[in-house]
Amino acid sequence: MKALALSVLLLCCACATPYQPEGFMGGYSEMQSERHAWVVLFRANGYTAPNRAQDFALIRACELVLDAGCTHYRLVDVKSIERRAGSFIRTGNGWANADDIRKPKVQVGVECTTPGFGVPAQQKLDSLRSRYGLEASNE
Image 1: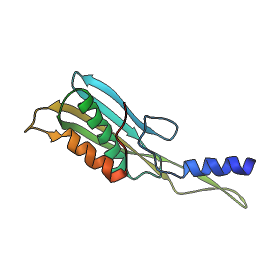
Image 2: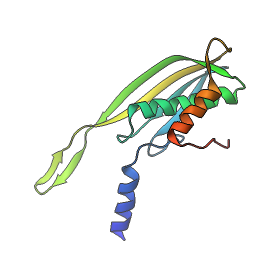
Image 3: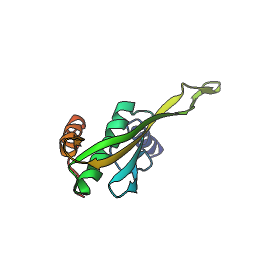
Image 4: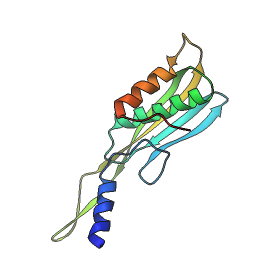
């Protein structure tokens, strides 16, 4: 039984962070900074590529823009931060330091704008969802 529980835990931990609200494995969170402006943060685990984390932050930003009734957006700020976490592995002689684990964290500032001055939110959202095989949310 312990082996099964350990296998499930290892399987869960060896996966890239999915597109989801922030939880145990990471995910997105957002804060509305103005009426039609948000800051989206996506925290990922060490199995997630930095460009994937940035795309997931952008997916959430597009969803917020569209939910507000806007059709276009512009990025006002993008920050990529790589968090580092040391790890240790068990060896025959005790514990050894393993390679650093790099965990991407991306912050995207986005605001609604008018057509001609920004990116079409629905088009960008559809493109990114298609790239990662994500279904449209039912929120």
